[in-house]
Image 1 (cartoon, rainbow over the protein chains, first blue to last red):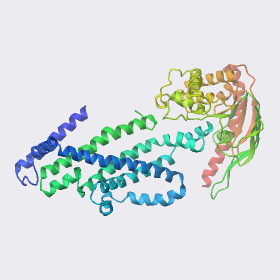
Image 2: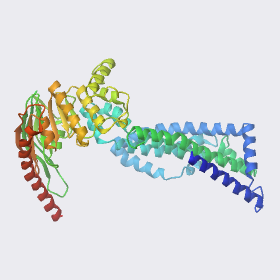
Image 3: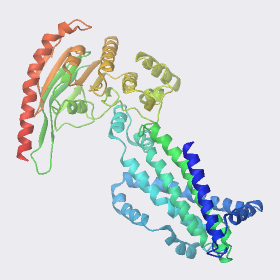
Image 4: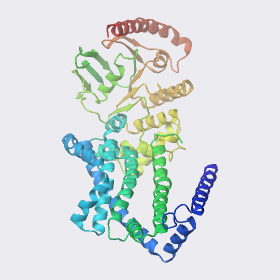
Length: 252
Length: 260
């Protein structure tokens, strides 16, 4: 509870400083709108459902893209972990691709798929796949040898050993992979939507910028940040904690 | 069932160094139902020998037979209890014990059998718990139940109580002794505790290091449960024997260190 109170006070203070700066009238309202104006714009957006539709569209892109990248990442990760040649060739390439910022893929996606939703989903998939792949690979390779030995002495081998022991043993890595894939995908999604023709939060952001609607720009930035941290802290970190505890990798 | 070890040697090849000989010409016959301890200083290869018997490592030369069948791979007729409990954290206690039974019998029978052995190790009330919720001693009990449920002909135990505190250790020793008296399985028990070896075994094989060989074969003919006073003379004999071995290892390690 302590922490929550500290945070609330911090954010109230931040809004007060913001309001203070606006009141000093150093910059025009079209550059720094007041907090009230931003919240009012957000309220209007949710009231007439435009922001709700944007959110739904963005989440649709995100979840389709994330689901695809988790599937591909898992499959390729297993391949890299089990086939040495694949790891030495494809693995190196994926490691290199992982360092390419996902916004770089946007121009390519636009040429291939146009400005529509397919292009956005493509960029989201690219954003999440590589980190998921590398986590699954590490997870499968790092299964504790004692689990394998125990499994073998109990008559498990080959495919059975892989499915019943290697895969469940690497779940903690998979969960971290999903969490990171979500974070990367979320960033990729915004980058892609900014350049798309909508709908989506990113599209509305660039639209608002074009029409000099600064309140909406800041409002959407706040929404993006809020969703990012809420998902990470409430969903993924909790999931990760739970798995790490169960797998005995962390004391409660 | 007789376990025959015929001229087993094991060496590890190290790049740029002379190969390390871990085991040298081990010859051994263990008759059915005997409780045998492998006792020796750390680095004498006793765990390696156990691992070879389990089929988890291959000997450099030599053969191992269970009756007439040669051991080359792991299989459920040789149950292993490791130093760490090696339970699967994603399964609860009951599911862990059912794991080796998966393909052998219908689900209902698996559950019954697993419950039976968990009651035997006094964990009948912890079926739904997950390994991380149990103490080290309880985890090791689960792993003993798991190996017993498999009904192996040979039970290999690799310092199973090495990581436990003294009290838990003594309680588990008593339970293992009782289980062994009930089931009369052939047990090969690796330990570095002389007292533990004497408490439990019919026979103690003392190993020496560098290279690992069996330097003495004691049979223990004391009445069970064993009393401290009865055990003392043998304890002293083995202690003296090991002292010279440990001194030898120390000398070699120190001379290695000064050479490096």
